[in-house]
Image (cartoon, rainbow, N blue to C red; front, side):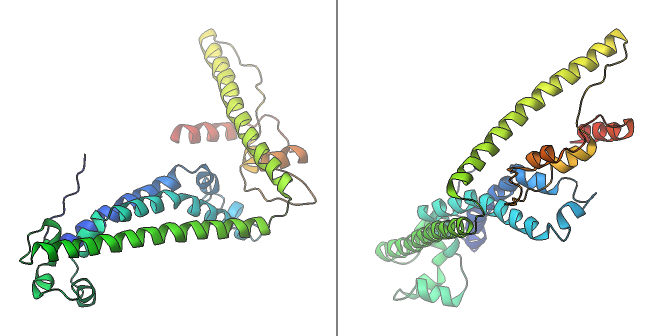
Length: 274
């Protein structure tokens, strides 16, 4: 377990900021890493960048990336808010500042020892009186808590504002949007179940044919083009009410026949490298 302990030296600023922002950075990276939309957006983009960077999808790409970034910022923002409300990290960091302007704000009305020994305030080892030392500590903690509540209020307002803007620009009504969300969730569940079912059947067929030394029967699978089309970003059009990319692919009647051997080899190689 990593225990925070302010060094009460000139390293206070770096030490406090690392404990304040390093976990937030890790949470931000995890937010992107665990977001399925992020990987759907970037998978294969170097091989075929036209899928997301074409003229018709550039704005959509930026919009979806913005949604991913906003959702990934939730956890880091919560961490910063809680850490600032606690006050310990901020107190340690600010006690190590060398900025004359910040020192003037923190040590206003305090003796010269506050300017010279501010880095020792967190440990209570300054030459100031115990009352002055405690007053400086409480002032730093109060600043931290005010900043924490400011972040919480700002994040809440920004979240409400972006949600209102998105709903105001929605092309569908409230009821249809509710249906859309329900459909998307059910389609995701159906896909996961079907993936398991087909993967089990295909692996069972292959293992059985391998041990029995038989030629396998034809196994119906989507073509490479179908996989590519179903993985693209979805854009809703009122003229064609498709609630997902998969819905559009099925309605458009894209060929779902078996793929040739060369493409199958590419898919298998890619799957093993994931």
